[in-house]
Length: 97
Image 1 (cartoon, rainbow, N blue to C red):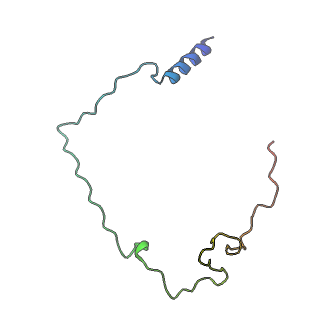
Image 2 (cartoon, rainbow, N blue to C red):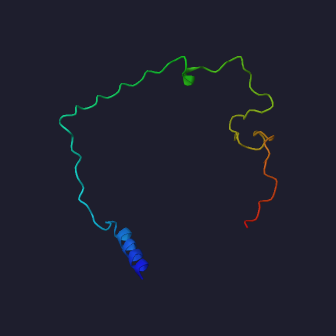
Image 3 (tube, one colour):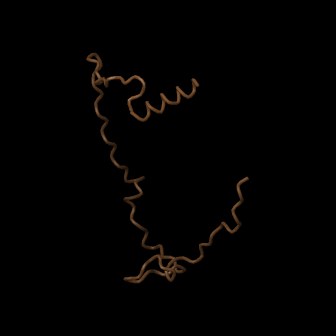
């Protein structure tokens, strides 16, 4: 009986959204003795490690095994997409015990 009362109280508290004892919201107070922390300046980008700034190597040829999509053709169509990718999952799924 006691557990049903507790369960009913929790259900009521959760459904109303107020909880058992609603506390008024307190405004955060700043300690006047503690000075404000200055903002940290942004770190400038390092061009030596920034991979977005590195241009593509023009000497690297495109993969000849993958045909390029022609203008107006869907690049994901079966004629253009790589057909070497096969599903690794060929076994039937196990039945849960």
